[in-house]
Image (cartoon, rainbow, N blue to C red):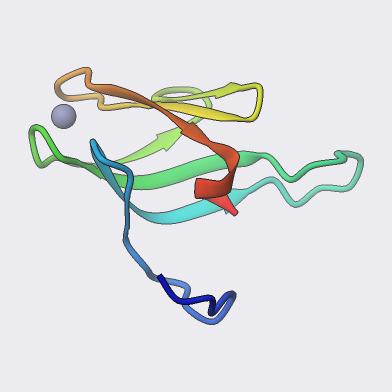
Length: 84
Ligand SMILES: [Zn+2]
């Protein structure tokens, strides 16, 4: 891993069960920490690509979020550092 940050908008993060391509954060003021609002990801089990949002496949937990595949139901808890 190199230490470059911020310049690569489209990098794929392999979390073990998912590949994450893009992360969107809430940008509104009033939150101490930026929260994840949506994630574009590909499931490593069934290869389906999907966008997980808070209304669906993305569940915020303390210190991160749980991502789940809408096609096969695979889930993984991801730390906040994955989304930074
Ligand atoms: Zn899947």
